[in-house]
Amino acid sequence: MNVFSSIYASNPGLTIDASRNLTLNNLGTLPILFRNKNQLAPPSFPTTPIYPNEGLITNSANAFNPNLKVGYVQSWSFGIQREINRDTAIEVRYVANRGVKLWQQYNLNETNFIENGFLNEFKLARPILQPTLPVAAEIASNIPGRTPEPCRFRSCWRSSAALQRPMPAILHATPRPSSEMQPSSMRWQ
Amino acid sequence: MGTFSGNFTSNATFRGNGLVAGLPANFFLLNPGKLGGAWSIENNGRTWYDSIQVELRRRLSRGLLVQGNYVFSRAFTNAFASSSAVAGQPSTLRDFSLSKTMSPFAIIHALKANWIWELPFGKNQLIGGGAGAFRSHHRRMGVPRCGPIQSGTPFNMGNVRLVGR
Image (tube, rainbow over all chains, first blue to last red; front, side):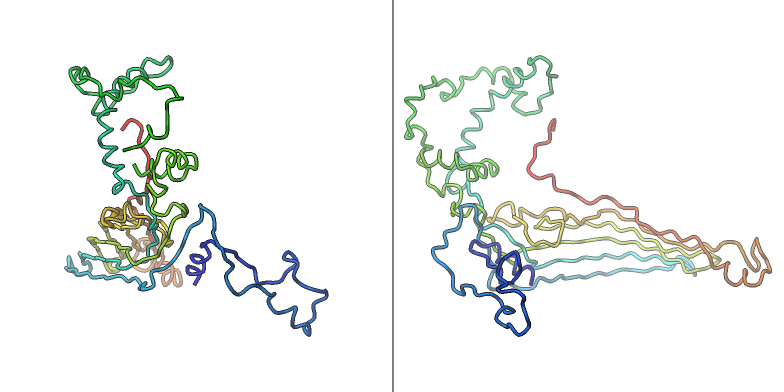
């Protein structure tokens, strides 16, 4: 029950405390006597949702699969037992368990970088940056007070011929003044 | 990749830059209005446990009882969680099998033993050969020993880069 209440309580919306206490200042006229039944009952609260319920961009939505089943475990084992002497025995067993249909909560609103083409763009951009890695390692090794670290990137071991390849055009591009940077020039298309 | 796009969506400045650059609001997230996530509890949790167990048993004989066993086991799960909480985000919703990894409860090697060795007191023993109550009770005192010697449980280092690796 706690799981259900905690999951649903995580949804955006207003939470109303239906109890009476001094902190909520809803005790009514003191003292409270047992004959004052209206002061012993829960205070009044709206029973219908209040709209619009826009929530915050950081809110989450939480729900259960309506066909949720109870998880279970399959278990099987077999073994063989042998007598070593009249007082001692040895047994060898194989034991296996399989948990099936166990409850798992996960985010359906996962980050996507495949269908939008971002992954392909990244793969295209990665070779452009690789020739610069040995240069960056060399620069880092010449910083005073910094102990050169062995570079284990595969690209660090490229031949000098590979490093002398023409650099991609994007790395030759002359930086444009910020005044020319229009939003349309930043499109990833 | 996931970290980059996650940082992009969680940072209001980056989101704003993306909109200015012409990216749709849901470029990385289908529902960008719920950065906290759209969480659902489903029946996709799986566990796999297989083990070989060897057990040695010696009944009490000539003052010595021994029980010991060794377990070699492998335990996997597709929801790495070190508690009974149900939350466990798969690597990708496209293929849950990619999330199959060692269980946080996995103990690959475990050796456990306990034994009773009767002290050499009492009748027909080295010490206190005919001492009444001493003979009838104290001879049953032994030296039990139990406790596992086992390998450690795995832990998840998360999305980190191991420096120097």
